[in-house]
Image 1 (tube, rainbow, N blue to C red):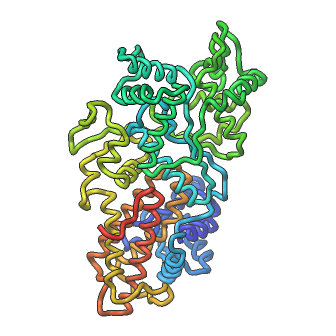
Image 2: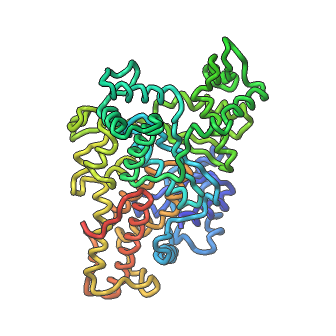
Image 3: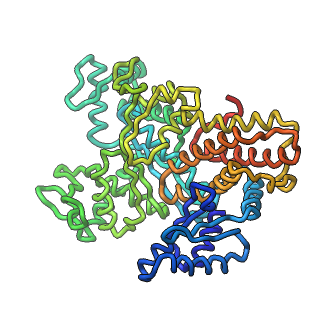
Amino acid sequence: MRQNILSLLKRAAGRDDIVLTQTKERAHGDFAVNIAMQMAKELKKNPREVAADLKQKIEKEDVGKLFRKVEIAGPGFINLFVNDAAVIESFKAAFEKGGSFGRSDAGRGKKVILEFVSANPTGPLHIGHGRWAAIGDSLAAIMNAAGYSVHKEFYINNIGKQINMLIASVSAAMKGEPVPEGGYGGAYIKDIARTVNESAPSDMKAFVLENILAQQKETLALAGVEFDEWFPESRLHESGEVKAAVERLKRNGATYEKDGAVWFRSEEFGDDKDRVLVRENGEPTYFTADIAYHADKFRRGFGTLINVWGADHHGYVKRLQSALEAMKLPSQDLEILIGQLVTLFRGSEPVRMSKRTGEMITFREVIEEVGRDAVRFFLTMMSADSHMDFDLELAKKQTLDNPVYYVQYAHARICNIIKNSSLPVPKAGEADLGLLKEESERDLMVRLLDLPEETAAAAAALQPHHITRYAREVAALFHSYYHKCRVISEDAEMMKARLVLAETTRIVLSNVLKLLGVSVPERM
């Protein structure tokens, strides 16, 4: 319904930059727009005069009678009162769509590669990796629902100094020697060393990497996260794509040699300094492999490249965009989300170390303590670029204070209502939805109808927290409605209408929880 309203307003105003806002008070209608005030500045006219002209155009365009009233308020706001019949017809259509309600073709099948987590295969995943996992996986589901074709990928950095240091660290542990300078310590290294001693593999490096990757995959599976492909960096070296990337930059005049190394003229493309591509010993840098990797993504036919990176990669963004530009690849089609850190708390006390190991708390430990649902919901509640405090105690609570419990409980409550009803949920056409006249009913109906637009907007903005917020708002509206209106009553016609409203709410909550990778319980 919101999209139909926006289309009408765009036709009336003759422009696309219209923001439709849901009003907070019924007396001001269902929606409001401030486009008249924007246009007044451009036209150098009185905003109310512009609003009056727009009001006439809106009423002329409204041949389908979406609005029962259009009024001008304040300095030039236009308040829109949606016709009850329009709400009811849209609501019937949403009810009939069931599990597919909320899906759209906004993305028009555009091929997207979404790379996230991509942790070095040198140890367990931490809570930051967990946040990128939850955000990336939910974003993929949301974008697919909005009509994009999304490929999820994990890039494995299995080449370079960090891998050599990992093997040196395991070797030292096998011999009972101290951790080498700059190496990896911790109980997991000793565990791997023990496993290597027991298994005596012919290729120790491959064995160690496989062991760590298996643990990372297992942890991600516990979080309900799976990838379409695990792409190893070594493939780029073996195929010659890393060398090809350097040669392409050379041909484009974007390199020079200095002190025996090959440098990229990244400063000319807006970076803060030039970057080394090939060291004096002939070894390409990690950056060079990353350039080749992103060129390979374009080669595979993806129209949009999305990366979810940690805060430590912030300075890396410009140099990568510069390299793609120098290779004459569409750098504007690369989107990078930089996520901020997560701090773990128990109530008001920050949690530094695992009680079990005395070391960093791993993502797996968090999942095992609070459960997958809480992990997935909590880690997508805020914008990726905001620092997050994760309260482990709150995440475990089986009370309405816990956001994920609050939403799941709304779904379970509806299931219980339907189960205990003396009537089955009717088809939308068998219920008189015109009986739903209470303010709490109207507010709930209108908000439920926003799901397709919410999904499309979250996909376009690359912000899954919009869906988490929407889920909480719908749950709050239903809980409020439930306390004001009896669904099960002796009035059979009213009960039919309210059962349709309850079932549609259940459908919407189920659909959004699935987008977030959260289970949809029928009992709690």
